[in-house]
Length: 263
Image (cartoon, rainbow, N blue to C red; front, side):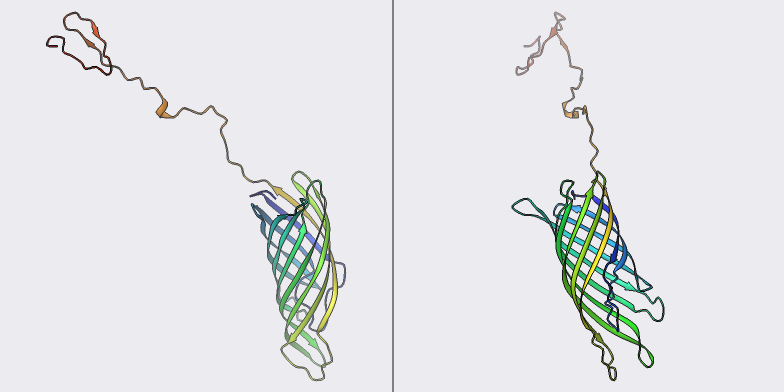
């Protein structure tokens, strides 16, 4: 991105693998989602905001976040984007049997940069999320339980971007290996469930980007008026005549002026 250039984007992400559901195990990060974002180009990289809606097992949640990346160039001329995203997911009370609460997620990443000539890109990412949720647990009786969920892991991404004059189309696939651990506020009698897990998550996404060039300062093509200090002033000159001959006396700069009668 060029300095002060803006990019408006819309994207959809779909989980190819199953999401994490189970007995007090859901981390609170929405997988199936639609997002809108705006990025602004800076001399050092890009920064922007994003937000959207997500669907999880019949419920609806909201997400908001910050996108921050710096540009770096390798010795062979390959461009890299180094930075990441921070995100908050808010899960309202959709119904009595769905989890509700919030989750914070950090996703550092490094990836190559695309161009009209270089359409393919790839990279690596990490993730760390902390969720605080409330869910219904069925045992012999229905019971509302609060729990915390910590999830961390790493993964890889690959994609293709078709760049046009004022827009681009982007497709990406992500695969991540993650670990999770739940902490339940209450101890259950005869609790045989383990809430630690490891799994592989795979997702695919598609996006449409629109470029808005930076504003340019208006310039005049000329001609420009001369400064007022350079304009010639038409000030009438004082003319002196000889009282005897009636002829004009021409003043000579640098010499004194004499009275024609007295000298």
